[in-house]
Length: 250
Image (cartoon, rainbow, N blue to C red; front, side):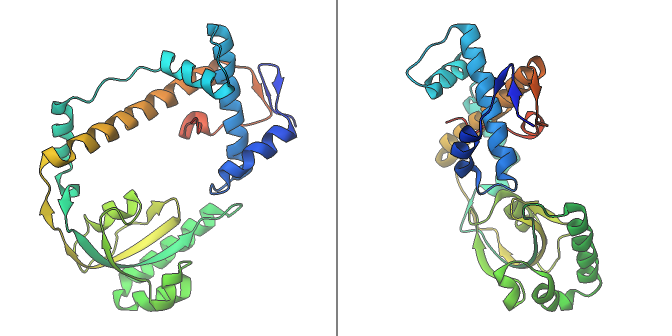
């Protein structure tokens, strides 16, 4: 079934050209198609606003610059974020941990994978001393061969969801729930942790400022796309990005 956006039909050639940009996602075809849909909606908006440009990307950028407005993250806002997340602004923080990974791959039956992961999590909770053996049996990570051992991990070395769990768990404990990241579902065992020393606010203010503005922009873009999708005539695809993501505009 062809994908049609406000009377414009996506071609196989367009999809083939877009696919290479989405090979790292769980469903490259779905994500590539969604990207093309979002871009077409933005180009239609450029037509409506009378925005011209040297390229499609230039026109899209101009639409976004005109339509999306975000508040500036001032020093007070940055400081409030810093104080609320003080544990993340440290130097020399390290954690030593092991994990069991249930990898999410394309076309996988996610409910079945989650059920299996929950079953293994319960086994680990019932017999923590069997963690290494269970990792060897069930983990999809190469670390499974050595009982799930990841060695010493410093902040910034793992994805945010995994890091948050590491640096909030108590040493000697096992995660009380499955930790979800883009790699899959994890069961974590924290062996020990050194929380390091606090970093002064002045050293991280600019990074916090940039992060908050990026987050604010992402929310604004997400909301704007929702409005475009709601007002458009789209057939041939069930859009996930309108609810759970944004296009990869450059």
